[in-house]
Length: 279
Ligand code: ZN
Image 1 (tube, rainbow, N blue to C red):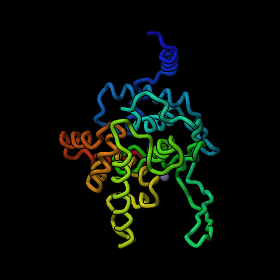
Image 2 (image 1 turned 120 degrees about the vertical axis):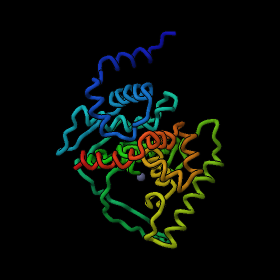
Image 3 (image 1 turned 180 degrees about the vertical axis):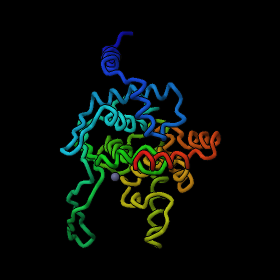
Image 4 (image 1 turned 60 degrees about the vertical axis):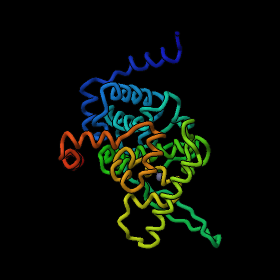
């Protein structure tokens, strides 16, 4: 059947080809794509091209983005959606603002006695409800390794969470998932992490303690780990890993284990190369 949408899509892809050299250059900064098969990489590449046609990347003064930099961001943005139906998951915003460095944004917090505290905090990313995503470029550059840090996936997970209203840690679930199960699994893990930090504020937690801030951050941080340190997430909170596996319809832990099975030094090697390339 002839489809206008498919035709437009093919035309956009034909007009904005990614050369094998450009793909190889970007790919080399993204060990978290290792182990994806050829069809998955092809789909990711096409969706990244379409992402760049649909979102406006605004670089602030002091930052120049070349084609490789734009693709580096877009590929990571599309990784979480790789096995989701081809719907408009990143709807409701059009702009990604890129800062040359961490930025300061005014914070406000009302404590239990009703006093509002305000302070300035340095941030590397923000996602506004019905507004833009803001990313500091050094954070984007530091993303893509198997090290539990991915600013792009973190901020865009907030956008998935916001698809059904406020950021509250509950994105729209698929029909084979149950809200009650999701809520109880996420809440128990969140409570466990908070109890651990209440007992020992300096505790070496299984995942970044920032996840204990609120349920929205818990979803964003665990999504970040799901794609960039699935072994640590599955070890700390196996049930959370299982829920995210149902939601994203991917199994990065199996992929990582496969890579490690074929090369025992796999992870150590990618960490060395990340230091070398970021240096
Ligand atoms: Zn966040």
